[in-house]
Length: 453
Image (tube, rainbow, N blue to C red):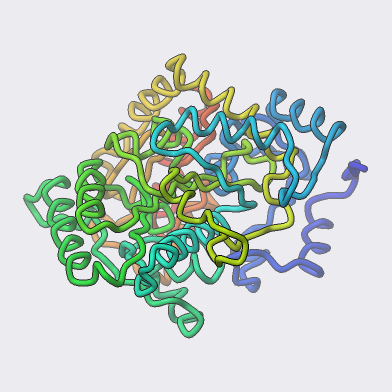
């Protein structure tokens, strides 16, 4: 039953702080200096709190609401499916939404993908991909392949296997004794290019170093795992598609799987169906999630080619079967929501609406091009970011928490912009209007100026 929410924000904040523990949060920061917002309604790109104040959701509620909140087509699909079949286990059972969604995804992504394994969340999809790669080599008689290669600045989730794939010191210092030890390759982050060096040239240097790592350890490596084009949690680090082309060639040369984590960057976020489309490549294992259900229900998937699938076929007791199961694998309501989302996504891409919004965002970012407090303005599709600097061009001391100040200033202007440290980014729903793009970017500029003054 939906509450009428007759009380005010302060009442709900007090009740929250007496009972909840929030993710990725130092709870002493609530409610000051970080305001806690009790949201009771959402529609389109807008959130509404108990007191009736509205906020433009410029970060898609942690990058999941692909077409905004409460989209009628997705809501209708969920309601219809819930009334018919909510859930049935996928071990020995099946149902039309899971089959239809798998067919749809494989048709959109194309060769060589031919199989879909469902998960509930992005981290679970990464865990599945890691286990698939490791177990594949074991089934082929190469049990010595048990290591993974990842990029500096990479982030792939917070379950133990997924968290092992990050070089972020915050996590490795806290949980290092629990984590796997991958091999780290340099990030092709364009911001790291030397003076006078192009982004493509720097990315090529990084690819050369990656090639050396894979050549030295090829017999020990299962797979390389990366986020194509944008390392989101790594400060929205962006790099050119040419790097992906080199990576595909290097992995092929050493017979190492390429696992693409498109959980945050896939499904239209970079302006194309997949970020890998910019490089005209396909990985060996593809992980998608977040916006797959339109941000309504937790759902993710791993797409694999027939060559990997066939390596797990064998007689009962052969030890070849893939050992992974979650209670809600391929749950029907989530698959129905995803089917409706794929309808919207295809229309947005094929009808040119997504291209239009990417162009509008690029134009709206113009005030940040030469702004004294903005450095490294970058955009990839509907993802944009800028680093906050002082008037000398130097980063602010971390203890000043300028990014937090931007967040608070933006909230006062009715826009949710939640920086990563001192990196201000925008990652709105694909359904954002021209007017909302203008509001978002104007609030970003004003908030940055107020916070950095």
